[in-house]
Length: 427
Image (cartoon, rainbow, N blue to C red; front, side, top):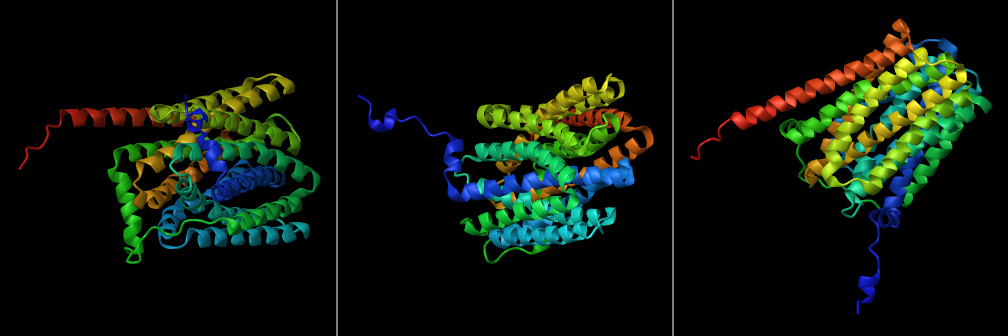
């Protein structure tokens, strides 16, 4: 006869995680802030295109969001090892609430301009730069050994916000305008502050006699450069953020200029990309096995870039508004599934590859790699301005696939060199 304990089915990792109140708070903060991120990117993009008519200026909005990742990602990673992560997270949430309230008053007074939107985007990006080295690090620390499930669940949630955020952005922008965009954002961020205050979070891991700030920063970069698996992971991250992710800035232009849609329906087609990402991320969180993590990661980037090229062709030749709407929607869903494969594995592979004492710093370097995105956004925005959105999408697809080919050839050559290099004789 089996014992009662043996008869009980094992609890799934995801169920275990969401039963932990502290993990739940940090996870929900990610969900709420993710909704606002995509909500604002859609609303800012539509508003900028309607007021300026410039694809390049539309593309500069996500550039402003990503600039703090480029310059401050590794810095925040070092600080997160030496100062309470709860204090850092609380301070960044308080800052972003203040920004939203101030922008709401400006929008209500009718004084909103592209320049002020750009400033709000930079400050929002500063908050976003804390996500990887602080909030996602906390998720890993609170996962109780279920790191893959925690990162997969967080990625699935983030991709669900890519579905909910644009829908909310389209509705709010069409009904109450930019004042409503900032007011709703302030309410969501305030809920995040409450969640942060009630959570019990681990403190710093760096001992009191910590190395100097610059030495910590340099050690994280050196560790990544010297670790071949991490180096490959982060180079693929750069490829995706320079040629894959930037296509999302063209969705408002595809909706408004190519398909002639209202802000609400622009939000609908943008949310379908998020729907595909949510479906893909949930499948990964439930089904992905560690042996396939690297293949999922690279395969997601390949599929994403290939579908962007198809989307560029589709926006050029698809006939009739209804045919175009449904075809573009399906293509966006596929890009979402592909980006989910990339996003879920990016954090998981990086976290698992770095030893505990380097994780915040390595995740800070990952944030720096994600911060290469502004180059890609400027690239696609400038080409859309010069040659049209269809040509821009086709070009970034070809550039990204070529970069992956170069990376593969380089990796094969490195493998061959290692095989041909004789081992050093023992002294």
